[in-house]
Length: 324
Image (cartoon, rainbow, N blue to C red; front, side, top):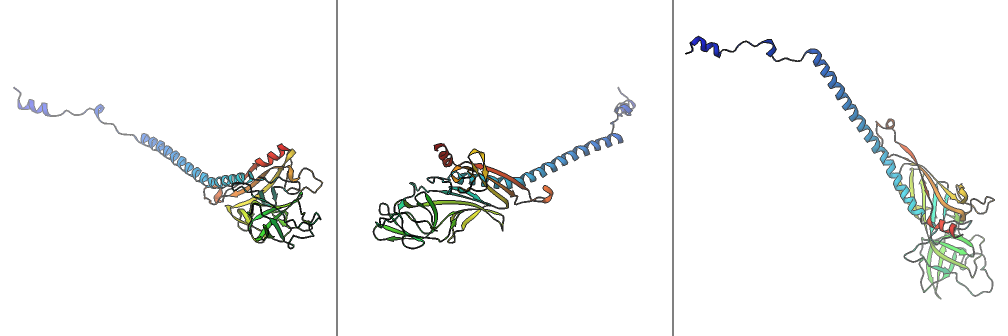
């Protein structure tokens, strides 16, 4: 049997030895750990800030690129339509550039090609009418085709007199007896940088016709730095446009010609034979577009501006060159 003293000795814990005690961190270890933690945290914060700044910069730049993509797609779509049923001549081309303006002409298909209407023939034996129109200085009578016509006031039309061409802005179109209709047009010498009106042109009794024309114009609104797109002209002959892109600081259209030449516009009457209207094969457009947004962490807080360039070769112009 155990004695009481023996029981107490068995139940009383012995004193712990130094080796069995739990050991804590020393001061150097704590300092090293804090240093490592600060380095890791600082790196993570720096990476996060850099990523956030990069993303904000990307967002600002993306607004510019998005506007540029839209402008490029719009230009490509419209310039591709240049010359549909509208063969260019040295002095009257279907696509033109002048200053900061690009203009494109074609014949509409809805779904068939717009009608061609011959001039009223009064039966006189002389080949041409007296100076002016058939019913006034800005008035011409034409013959209906199948008893109808597809011209209306406010539309643009191509007047063809032999090999000579004029662009007319119709102010009124009215029915006349004997299967005729009468057009009145704006009395100006130039429309969209092309000859307009009659001037000294004599109308031929045979070989004169009129046909509806489509026009698309791109130009810059200087007061607001807007790039505008117009599909019609006002009663005074000015383009009536809508905004394609804002913050367009420069818009520089040029014409591309055969043999690799490039010109600000075309001319078939000067001594330079590399810039005739029927030698145009495409357009080159450069534009400087500025971001609509800015960010203090991007470009010093100033809006970003970028230059863009597009080249478009209308299918119809290439067809003309291959055919010739």
